[in-house]
Amino acid sequence: MFIKTPQFIQSFFPSLVWEKDNSEKNIWLTFDDGPTPEITPFILQTLKDEDIKATFFLVGEQIETYPDLFQAIVKDGHLVANHSYSHKNGWISCNNTYLKDVEKCQKLMPKNKIFRPPYGKISPLQIKKINKKYRIILWDVLSWDFLANITPEKVKNNVLLNTKNGSIIVFHNNQKSFKNLKPILKNTIQELKKKGYNFSTTW
Ligand SMILES: [Zn+2]
Image 1 (tube, helix red, strand yellow):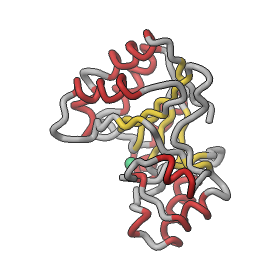
Image 2: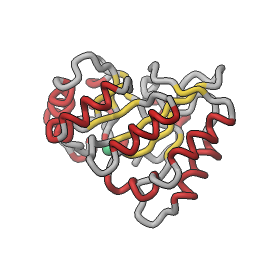
Image 3: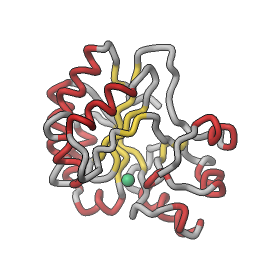
């Protein structure tokens, strides 16, 4: 996980996107990992019920394993984006291998223009190379939904207390987060709507 000191990191890597324009009440819901049979249908149904769109940072090998789920995400009008082919940690991967892994995922979504590094871990050289082709999207609001011993209520509060205009919110489209999202995803979205936020997928 990136230690989040945005001003510090931002000054070295101005190209990294931690949050979006805050002049309007727009926020960006993002779901990392998957597609995953245990949770993707639940997320899609919730987004459909609430009539909003989100961005899915998907893992290439999961797309190939679950092509029908991938198609369901696309068909519902959500944005699919690159989260690498095999979810490598950039800090311990050789650059060539890492970049090839990103391109292997990209073949499955040729029109995509954004990338989120797995674990938020990416080296300066990798940033430089990847930025030639993609915008690198990080986040300002982490829900911590992947933690085994967090309560769903706490996940919801992490989101509601930290979201502001222009926020990029991270949930997870994986097995670990299902127990935490199932009870609260719908209500969290409803609370964000009550605060007047619009849900954008325009990057
Ligand atoms: Zn991930």
